[in-house]
Length: 237
Image (cartoon, rainbow, N blue to C red):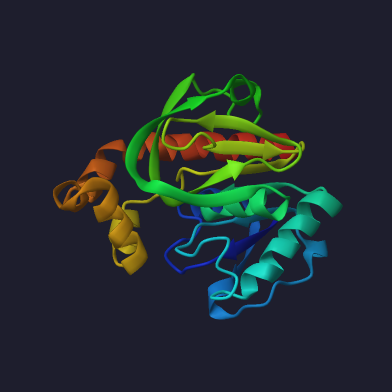
């Protein structure tokens, strides 16, 4: 497949999914929107993957390219009906582009937390094979507060009721991170906005130990990513 990736920060790349896509022989075209890259003609692509980033969906004045991105997502999902996979900011952009509402959380959610699948989530193709609850890695300060038309909640928890959603038959967003590698925490901790949210959510001591905390869960998270990736391509193939 030809995969189009919208990237908002160099260290918020597709992570372990790059390995999966390379193994499968997919062609990947990355658009670094924060660096001024232009969105190409959408016609030649089969899957749109939209990654995370430190900006928020409402920061249109600070990041004018968000308008073009939101329009492209709307065209991709609503007009073209093609498969979409968003993580964190990419999850929020899906909701916002299609008429939902994203807002700031009272307290950022950072670290490993439990997330429960809804009845719809347990029946959804993307989350096939998972139990009623999963452990997931979080790092976000905004959340989907109102679903777009046709949106279905697939997973949630008390801190963030919309942890995963589907819009229509083939557009998915996941708030939690499944793309992590061993380098993720170190790379993200170097971003001032992420470092601040980490300390606010966890406190100084636990923030210092977050890399070690993730390391213990990484094999399970990588297996989760593999299953989601396989489910995704099975659903859209």
